[in-house]
Length: 366
Image (cartoon, rainbow, N blue to C red):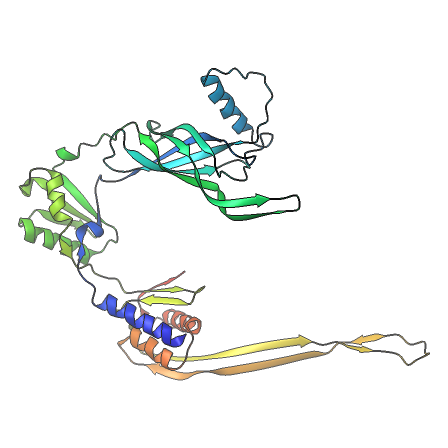
């Protein structure tokens, strides 16, 4: 396991050290080019007895009554308790530049006590945005993400049968009013704000178009002057800009996952001079009570005598080791691997080095 971890770390550190330039489109978001969240409240029918219990979910009965009345069925004052319907929340994401009639995917989630949405059909459901307007309408057969089986003595559930998706299950009915072609200035928002990366993006764009077309405003924003590019439209400008290659600046960072023992780090992480000592101390306590029986034909009583066995074992660990100034973290990990330190012990050592102020990187623990 140690050899496999060492090989994996070597591959990761090598790839990080010699990173290739990245397209600007993979580093930034263009101002205004974004998706919009949609949400709706609907009804799923056709379930095989796995729907809401209407006694516990009165809102299901209410929406079912409203739908039937819109279809011309008068159910006022009627008592009905079907178990093949379920109230759901429908969510979707309206992509940028979506046009009327374009299909989008939707996600269906039960909000009542339905056992499963498998095989159900979503009835026509309007999807609203944050402004309260309807931008899409969803309807279709649900593909559930799990399965459940129930018997008289118990049941089994695999996955999440109370949630599912409808691929291309909604149709866009209203377009977002965004005059992209009329823009004269577009801001580029960096996904990972960094002054050096923003400056490199500015330089790369100006080398393509000329000085003054791109201006860095801050660590997370670069302004692009569309009128100075000489292109026909902003879309033509972004076609050229988004494919320009830039080498982003990496922040020194160490990411560890305590559950799996995974450590991912960059080659630019440095450690100051520090001494490290590590060992494993194990405390074991065992209870083995003794039962003392009285002599035969006597009036004595059986007595339980407590018997405790306590042991402290100290396994061999790392002695006092000194790390020199400016040592890279890859060299430290290679040395710890050579000493046979497990990944989990290595995480504890790195946390202690960070707490001592000798690890010069952002330390992320998941």
